[in-house]
Length: 283
Ligand code: G3H
Ligand code: 13P
Ligand code: ZN
Ligand code: NA
Image (tube, rainbow, N blue to C red; front, side, top):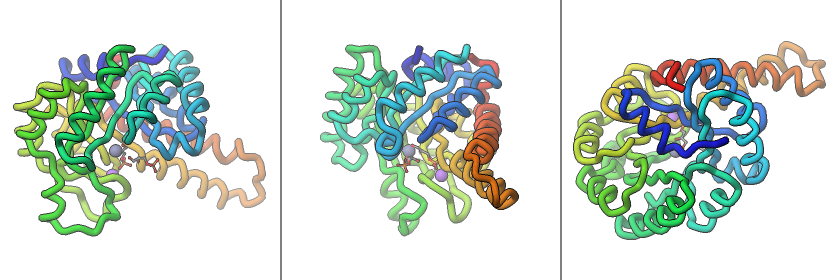
């Protein structure tokens, strides 16, 4: 069965590694996440964005993740990524998600706290973990200056207050990462991460982690990041392989001959990330 992220992240925090949280949109990627975790003997988090739920269907995602979890020996969590409303998060809990993110980062602090607490009261009553977001994690397409970027970063004192008032299980912070493909090399604000981690004793979540250099990921893990989100790198591996096979075999009309190798490519990149995060053998 699916496990809440709380259990996975507490062990990761105690033992100094991070758990990969990989986005899934279809059967092949769900299978790839499970296969990679099993091969690495690692705990793993599968997560579905609202876009993923819209594409695949809530019941399909939940059913596939449950099957995948039951087919491996390692612990698997199913998490909603960037949930934006109380109602939507409740639908996910009812469908069997073991963990949820409520992203109130666009709201003023008090409203973000209130929304997070509302979700937390219900989620905790049924054994579901909650991740919240403080600070704004943008997209790489956002055309903003360095000053504007820093204004969106997580304030360590606000983080302390947020966690004290909500008792949330994990906190996503803005320290210089962005969703999608980076144009240059991302610069992470490690001093800010250190300050946050001094004041906040819960697992920290790093979003936008595709394209962050390996050294920066290792440093983030050593400073207490416990959950690392990867979507873009899986999309790239999957789609590049689709293109490669389709180009090499223009007469191929069997989807399995194209999506099978793409699934293998996804397994490979997910295994690399699991090793980088230090969670191999930690199942
Ligand atoms: O947080 C962003 C994730 O990469 C999901 O992206 O909304 O296109 O599914 P998506
Ligand atoms: P990337 O697509 O940049 O890996 O970000 C994933 C993420 O943060 C999902 O919430
Ligand atoms: Zn994210
Ligand atoms: Na990214």
